[in-house]
Image (cartoon, one colour):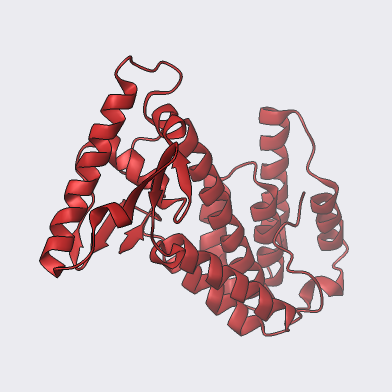
Length: 272
């Protein structure tokens, strides 16, 4: 069985789609898929689907949704001529278990490639690090579970996945910067800065790329745009790390021109 959550929900078994079309069963499948091989309690599934306002029939209705999911799985298993659906979507005391290898869910491949990228960075292999981070990001097909309605529990998981994606993106950009690819990054960083107007790490990397590309004036303008947004929206000044970067740019610190190094921790979080 293969399940994709890093984009629209995709679930296939033996070459057949087993993703339900109805909204609430899709929620349940998504939550189970994000906990492969683990029991998700019935109370957690009901909370995801209905929140705190549970209908009287919540338990019975949840069982009907599980039956719908098993029906989708049963058709695929019948075509393959093997397997018992209750071994795949199993009932356990107090809940349900999607009994699949975590590697069947695309999140596992993403996390493995990110870990490999960090290991490559630590080993001083910047090109491999950049490539593995890029491969990890290429697994994403759009916003996670973009076509699934999310309750409170899925919302927490979506926030976690979005943070993981942003961290991997920052890591890939950091590696590319150290490889001297600042000119190629300018368009991407400009777009990211506009998309995240108060995200200091992105703006700091944009400032550094502009400075290395010989556009120091634009780097200073990028700082002042960031500062203006932070003061206006949050009432705070840029973090000390960003202000030190500004001072280094103003003083034409030659250290800012150096790249090709992996002699320390991956600077994914320039701020925070």
